[in-house]
Each structure stands twice: as structure tokens, then as C-alpha cells.
Image (tube, rainbow, N blue to C red; front, side, top):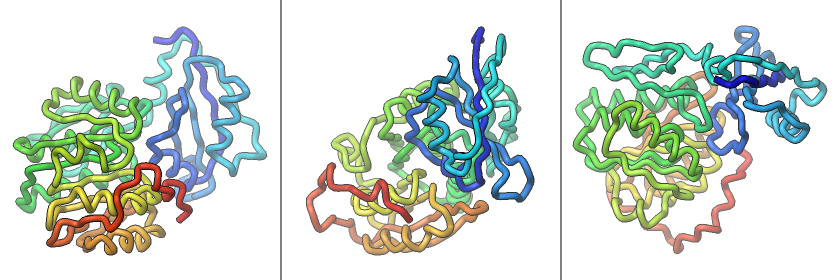
Length: 314
């Protein structure tokens, strides 16, 4: 319980809200929540930031930079005395259900469905509560793979965020070796805490910039590769992800808009991967691809400083 907490609100567009929700690398000391204010109006959304201290000018400028459409609006700053700011930020996060999975916060406890699995994932510093279409779409795709009888021995979740997709993989394929990585050490700490909270064991956690890392390579090749990040990194990391995939491996990609699909698919086609399925979630798309029949070998040595696609404007 925080004796003094604060809320900052700014108007935003749906596109800005979805970009915030899908970003895993926002170094902001706040819990960010986006809300649709007018149904089906892409311009009428709201960003709420919950903080444990009064926001200074630098914090307000940082929040404003997230929503350029609000450049002409002053932020609404509220002091929330004697209120639990995390609980408030989660007030609108109703449980989501995808296949056998239910994802909820402590503000909305649930009973696991018969034969299913509930995960308690609090809103916080890492992306991946299951409420964004990219994450829920990945859950649905993993569940579909299991329902179809697919089995995997080695699974990697690149850009794991809260660890949710790695936890789902452990539940669906308990005998698999499951690796979860993220560029952000905070996300790995959050994943470790969430694993303990949900009694999930056996996930190997690594802080890694991209997919080419000694600890990742030591387990490769993977027959299931999951990457729920953003379109720019997905494109620039295509050779890396293809290189750690086993022949005919399943690759699940998310964090891209439908308008970015062709660019992402083309990047993986150049690495021998074939598109097998698409799951549309509003403007967002989840892809399932099959790696080539032969192990992909990049034509140039891996250069950890050579990826300039992270800022790719698609």
C-alpha cells in the first residue's frame, strides 16, 4: 500500500495505445494502462500512468512523447492518497480466456477451468499480461498446436516479458526444455517472480540481446521458437531466429500489425521459412511459420552490433 501515489492521464489514439501495450522496452518507472474511451473510435483512447511519486517535468515529457497526438493537451495529474496504485491500475483487467488458459490479476481471482490452467500475472514493468491481442493470440496458437497433437522437445520464448508464453509451453509440453530470454533484465526478474507465484518450474532464464547468445546456442536447435516483440526486431532478427530453429521447426511470431505482415513474412521467407497460419486480432496479427527442411546458416558471421533494424519504420 502506497501512502501517496499519482496518476497521469493523456488522450491518445488506438495506434498509440497498441504501440505502448506491445512495447517491452519502455524504461519508465510507472505502470502504463490504455483504455478505449469511445467504442470503435480509433482516436478516442486514453493513457493512464500510475506512479509511486509525484511526476516531475521529465516524467511528464516522457509520457507525452509516447502519445504525439496529445501534443496540444496538458496532462491530467491526480494525487491518489491512501490507495494501492497497482490494484487501481489493474481494475479494468478482467480475466482473459484462450483455449485451456485463463490469465488473471489478483484483483480478479478465478478458478481454473476443468483440465485447464490459470496463470496469475500482475500488471507491472514487463509486457505480457495476456490482455493484448498479440499475447492472447500466441496463447491461442500454442493451444491449437497442442490440440493438434504437436509435441516439442526444445522451446524458446524470445522477448518473454512476463514469462506467460514460456509458462504456457511448460504446461502444454511438460517434458520439453523451455528457455525464456529478454533484452531487459527487469523482464527476467519479473518472469522469475511470476514463475514462483504460479508454481512453474524448469524454465531456463537468460538476459540476451537477440537470439544469438552462448546460452541460447548451447540448447539449440529448437523445434518451437516463439517471438512476441515488434515488427522491426522480428525483421532484423529473422536470420538469428531461423539459425536457432531445427529443420521443420514451428516459429510463432507476434507483435506486428497486419499492415506489416508481408514485410515480416518476406524476411523469414528469405531464411527458408514458410507461412502456415495467421491469427488476426484487430489490427494485430500472429503468424505461424515452418522453418526450412535444412538448418538455416546465416551467410555472414553474426555481428551483435550490426542489427540496425530495431528502429525499422514499417
